Amino acid sequence: MQPVIGASGTMPQTGATVSLAAKGSGNLFVDDYENNAVEIVTNGGAAPSLEGQLEAPGWNKIGTIMEDLSNQPASNWVDKHGNLYVPDYNFTAVGLTLPQVTEYDPSGTLKFVYSSNMEFPHAVTTDARGDVFEADAFNGVNEYYQGSNAVVATCPQLGGGQRGVAVDTKGDVFASYSTSDSTGAIVEYTGGLTGCPETVLEVSLGVPGGLVLDKSANLVVCDETNGVVDIIDPPYSQISAHLGRDYGPYRFEMPVSVSINKNNTLAYVTDWAEQNVDVVTYPAGAAFAQVGSGSGVSYPAGAVDESNYVP
Image (cartoon, rainbow, N blue to C red):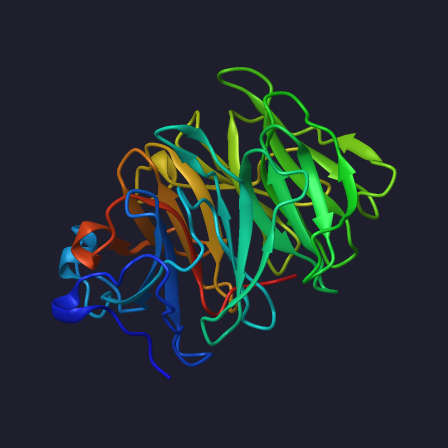
């Protein structure tokens, strides 16, 4: 069943169920901060010039997910089974409401809401077993069994709060956090969160945002201070490559979220300052396309391919 949008291309009313496209059709799920929604965008072709999305074929909004998304979706995630996870900051004009991570099954049906021990969810990921991990700016990192709101394990806030989270094939958990207005760090919890066995990685970088792992176990990290996406190979002591700034055709202003497709050929970098999702080849970083207002997305806060790479 294909996703639908309202009459004349308008968004459906809050609470309407909108189906995801058939699994494997290659759609992009973009968190739209301004519209409090997840926009479903078809994965199109390469742009013939650096003008990006306006000249790139096939990047079009075909649906919107709003059910149980109360406010301000952040960096989203798709697991190995095609389930979509969306963190909600949930700040409103009258203050903070219930923060949560909302899970949808591959048909687009609301599946579960995680909220225990959450205050300011920034990012979400899953491990090989299907456990759900939430990076929280005020409450560290939380782990849940899929479909359960009980916290399995939790580790406390570090620095300015955890902003990104990733889990490798061995079950080691990585979380990014700021240490000042211009610097940050990445912590590794070897073997998982139980007992919080933390080791701060030696690598130096600016304030980190979202992070993921690629097929080679490299960490791919948004550096908001320096406007780049850093690639850090094991043992994670120094940056080995970059996407953005002087290292490729795109000059990111404030990359806050990154994800990689299953084949590790494209990276989706959400630039908060430019209000775009920059699609670049991976790991070369060549310009491919751009998703933004031309695709019906007002203010992207994160993006993930339906065929997402999950370690």
